[in-house]
Image (cartoon, rainbow, N blue to C red; front, top):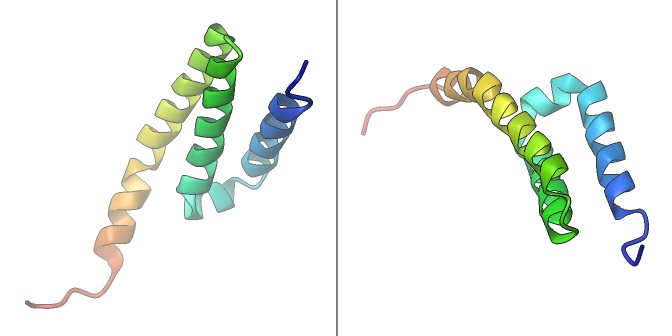
Length: 81
């Protein structure tokens, strides 16, 4: 395989991020970016079925964290314009 261990390392990174789920809740873009990179790689290597599994995983994570993102946006001090 000309791409070495790219897929393996991206999956390993996802596993580390999932292990420390409090970090993914604090910085969800890092987790979603890693999934996006993996999906891009899987599509490039024509592993479409596996890519779709990770798209579903990203979608579920996005839905799950939408409440957290909304709370972060509204929890700051409000200011009048």
